[in-house]
Length: 341
Image (tube, rainbow, N blue to C red; front, side, top):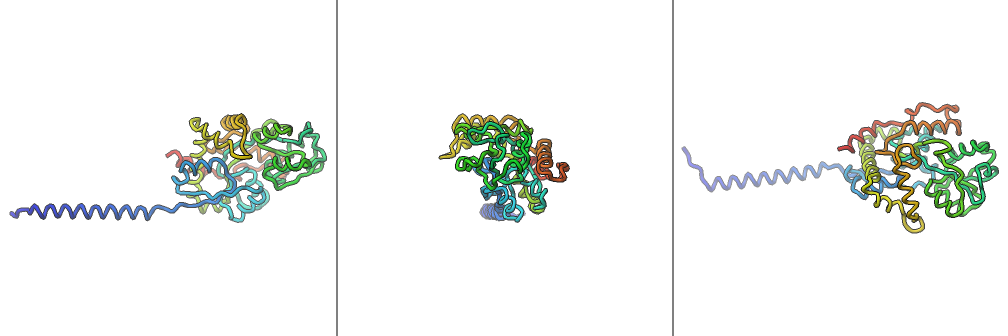
């Protein structure tokens, strides 16, 4: 029977440990090499969820980054999305509907982020929507959500579409233009901007929520083919924005959210208006200006928008088609499951 050499045993153990260390190091290098590169998405529009997702490392968690483009006008946004210059649009969902209705591109809506809270705001001295007869009104585009709401409100006031008034279009910041051009008699503004306007003597003539009803107006939409070809990264993007929306709506983050809403410089809002806007966003499904929990797509509120377009714009022969034609929530459902992990 042979005897073991103690020195040889120690040397053998050291060799084994050395090989094990090299193997672990090599495995680590291999894992790093296999880690997918961060994918950059081009997003036009957007808002606080993207800012929050970047600030809190949520985008990085899902292996994506976002290159945002400010929305200069609805026409430019829709053209860039149709041409593939942008991957995702975060804006008024009716822009996507208009692209489908007008045959511009095969667009699908993939989530819903907020409800409409627009108000018809007029120059000082104007007392009712009926007083807008013969006036020039300012819109972003003549055939998307703000213009459709404006046309509907004017119809309810007895004004014939595009006969008793005229539009000037191409303006995202309508209030700023109304300040500069007194000949622009009125336009649709968000509730917070409407409150600022009232403090400067402008007049609110009514809200979309009271005159039309709850409308789902914010969310993400993409080209159907792009979604099919980039399903994985689209799902990760939606999951990231779901998590960001949760952070925004968490009471624990109220102070930080209000600070972000306040703005800076000339765009800085008074504290009472920020508090009012925050409470409005947290009111729950269907409330004017409310955020949608987990970016849930409110189908009934979306159908209201289709009815509005059919009635006012006479799209689809005046009869709204099935809502399912315009959205695909399969990506959202996968993203929601991913965001729960």
